[in-house]
Image (cartoon, rainbow, N blue to C red):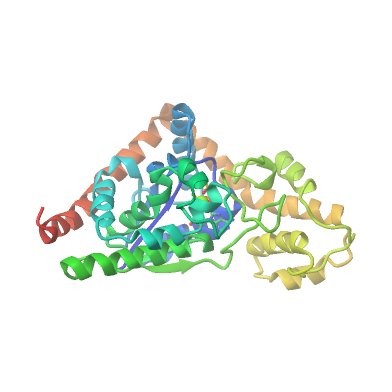
Length: 343
Ligand code: ATP
Ligand code: MG
């Protein structure tokens, strides 16, 4: 039977890109999967520390991320929700995979370069980048591969920015299985239609939790007045009308994409572009803000409830219960892995 695994970093409250690109798919899979399908969703705190974090703030973000997962409709009795660091097999398998993973492949990955704000063609071997680059940031795709492989996941729902990492995970499977026999399973990528939601401040960058400008993203817990403000400040262009033209009008087109993903009649960004053609940009942004606020309202209510439930102890109950189930799933794989390696 299929095994679905995915993760999110507790680097802040999830935004519309996370929601539309990944989290909404997690819920859809949960609600449509056959009962025999195993679903595991992890808050990957070990990944979050690849860049400097304040410990108290990280603890808070973990709780907020967990509350968000419950607020969007994940059911802890159906999906295993857990903190990555509470299942040590993830780290153990990472080490074992590191021993068959290729340095050359890792150094061609683009994400560590973008987190260091280096050019894509920079080599890890030039002195400037070498001193800034921490080993964990460089090797974290191996940990990500371990996250997936330790649960023998067959399907991984992620946004487009993760497709390179998924390919690397499959490469880890090939390398490991070549050395030790066919014991690990190669995962398939599941990509949502909203695979790349763009920043409100720079439509050439993806929306990110860790970008320094909070106006670049709408959090799924933002209240209507904040959504309205961020929307009015969104970077568009100087043509005061609406049309869908991703090439020449990336800002306006990103907003049309956004509302198309929320459109209950399934209208495309092109169709909505025609519908809003007579709107001025200010009027259009106001309509976009209203559409998003309305769609997020029930999530925000549930989020507040979940955070406060049982004096805050409900969340602890959820992740502890998840950790027990996730350990069981990971330990079964590790038994096979250790044996095949000779450990
Ligand atoms: P960070 O900036 O800290 O890396 P992030 O916003 O990229 O945060 P992640 O926790 O790294 O979020 O990713 C969680 C999931 O959300 C992944 O599946 C990722 O592909 C997806 N995702 C992230 N940003 C977007 C986006 N702008 N559009 C679509 N999917 C996204
Ligand atoms: Mg990311």
